[in-house]
Structure formats: C-alpha cells, structure tokens
Image (cartoon, rainbow, N blue to C red; front, side, top):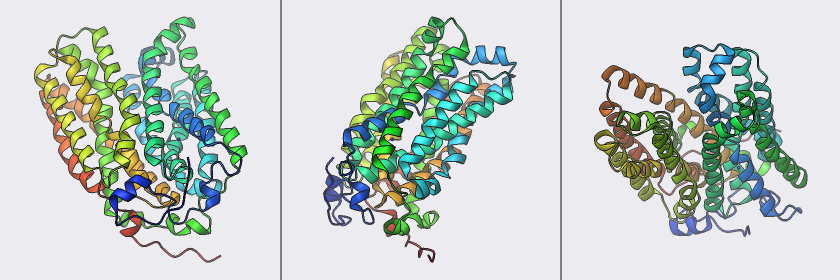
Amino acid sequence: MGGMSTAADTTTDPRATARSAENHPTGTTAADTGADRRGLPAVLLAVAIAAAALNLRPVVTSLGPLLDKVRADLGMNATVAGLLTAVPALCFAVFGVAAPALARKAGPIAVVTAGMGAIVLGVVTRSFAGGTALFLLLTAVALAGVAVSNVLLPVVIKRYFPDRVGPMIGLYSMSLSAGTSLAAAVTVPVTTALGGDWRAGLGVWGLLGLAALVLCLVTLLLRREKGTGGRAEQGAARLPIRRSRTAWALAAFFGLQSTSAYAAMGWLPKIYQDAGVSESASGVLLALVMAIGVPASFVLPSLAARRGDQRLFVVVLGLCGILGYVGLAFAAGTASWLWAVLVGLSMCAFPLALTMIGLRARTPGGVAQLSAFAQSLGYLISIPGPILVGGIYGATGSWYLPLAFLAALLVPQILVGMRAARARHIEDEVPAEAPAAG
C-alpha cells in the first residue's frame, strides 16, 4: 500500500543502512524484488499502493458526519452508536492478525487486492442494510479488508521497493491521510448533492474502492507473484516475534500514537467549541489537523529512513503533542490554529511508526510478522483511550484533566518510541525457528 540493486547487510553501519533503506534484504529473491523485471512498471505498482491507501479510512470517516441520519433511519440506539467508535480499532486488531498467514499462501498483493474487494463489498452493501445488525456486519466486512491492507501494504513496499522504503511509506501514508481528510470533508456536500440520502452518501465511496480494486487486479495479473512463504523466506515467516523487545516497543508506540490520534479526531471540535470557537470554525480547525498530515506524511518517512535511527523524530513529535495539548487546555480560543498545527504534527507519529516497521526487519516475511504484531496489539491498546477521555470530561465538566491525560500519555510514547527507533533488526534479537519438514 525503483531501482533495486543488491547490497550487503549494513546493520553495523546505521548511516549506510538508512541510505540504502534496507537494500535487498536477506532472503528476498531477485524475482521478488524485480517489480520491473516481469513487465510490471514500478509506477503502476506505486499508483496501486497509493490508490489502496486512499481507501483505508473513508469507510470510517465518511460515517461520522452522517451518523445521526443513519441512527434515525435504522433505529440505532445511542449505546450501539457509541460502540461504533471502537469497532474500527477492534476489527483492525482481530483481522490484521491473519494477514501474514494469508500473504505466505497467496502473496501480499493478492491479499491486498482481496482486501480492496472486501472494502467495496462492505461499503456498497451496507448502504442497502435495513437494520442495525446487518449494517454493523457489513461495516465489519469492509473493515476486515482495511485491516489486512493496513498490515500488508508496508510488506508490499518492503518486498518490491527495498531501497525506497522511506519515499514509498511516505506515498502510502500521505494517500491514507488524504483519504481520511477527503471523506471527512466532502461526505456531507456529496450526500446533499445526491438528494440528502445517507445511503447514497456512504455508498458512493465504493466507487473509490472500485478504482483501487481494478488497479490492484491489473497489478496482480501482471505480477503473478508468489506467497512470502517460499524457501528463501521461511526463516522470516517463523520468527518468534513475541520475544523481540523491539517488536513490543513498536506495538506500544503504535498503540499510544493511535490513542492520541483517535482521541484528538473525536474530541477536538468539542474542545474548541467549549472554548468559544464557533461550530464551523472548529470543523475547519479539525480539517487543519488532518491536512497537516498530508504533506508531512510524505516528507517524514524519507527523512526518517535516511538516519540510522529515528529517535530524534520520536522526541520532536512527542513534544509537539505535549505543547499542543497544554495550549488547548489553557488557551484553546487563543492562537487556535497554532495548537491545531502542533497536534497535527504530533499525529505524524503514525507514518513514523510505519517507517520503523519497514526498517526494523530484514525480509518482507519479517516485516509482515512485525507489522501484524505491532498494528494488531497497537490498535487493541488504543481502544480505551478515547472512551477514557470522554469519561474524564463527563466526570469533571472541563477539558483540563482529559488534556492532561493525553499530554501525559505522550511521555511513555516517547520512551517506548526511543526504544523502537534504535537502528537494529528484530532478526538480531530472536533467532528464526527451523522450518517445518517438507
């Protein structure tokens, strides 16, 4: 979701490692990395990755602006509507675990293609749902497609662009941020233009998914890839990932940054409105927070991949978040745009986490396992955060303690992030288990 020359392992030279962005990882065959060598232009694969990434959030962010209409039409009670905020993270965690096994059998591009199909199916058919249960089930189908694509797009990048990990992660995360912002910004106007029916407003996003599905299908047919579980990658596929301290640190970092991001996206307009900012202006400020991530998500991974480790970026982004939350607590109505920019910058910890996942393993199989572990556990960690923020606000009637809670969470985020950002590979921490006989 370039050119590929073979290079020796550069683990002992962090700068060389960063410059090559993990050139030809051990266990990756020439056939695996040669995106151009089997008639598939690298640009087509890059466009397919960007298109797939563009579809990873509209299934969620298009629903928020129309939720009141959906509730009224389907008779959805407030408790179920509240649970919808936790469903995406739960689905990402549950379904993402299966992604590496699927990729070993069919190949990561094939699984991402199937994921795009699930997104299209879920998004389109839920628009015809006549009841709450069916609506939730079809939303889960779409989120299952999102989950496996979340995990495997970094794997596709590692496998086919091993010396372009930073720029390609930048393209991926920028497209994901753009899809998030686009769905949040235009769902209501598009729904109005289509007659005001929420079913049309949600279902139209299936067209975006269909375009990505076609691109992925063309890519898959031209590539004719194999699974990631071939002889060359058996070691990476059988890593005892739970013994790796780096893997645990990455999972914790991913979970803490997701907590901050979901809480900010869910509560920021309310924070501004309680400070006297108008409803329309608070929406613009939320859009600013998300828009900051579009260019930053493209530039940051390339910058981070050039360094031997990424600790400097972890600290800077964490401090931006702390300053932003402190500013919101004491002066949300003053210099409102400044706090929005700082919070937006802190949310760039997401593309940084994706970059580190791509750099902390040598092989595509290793990245698949690390990505599934870090993202699945990370999304589980993130579930209680936004709920706790709302609970603290409800109990105190002010935003001082909720924002202090979010600022405090950035301290452990920085600490575990510094551990995850060190220039090393998980293969150096945990020896690969012996392949099964046969």
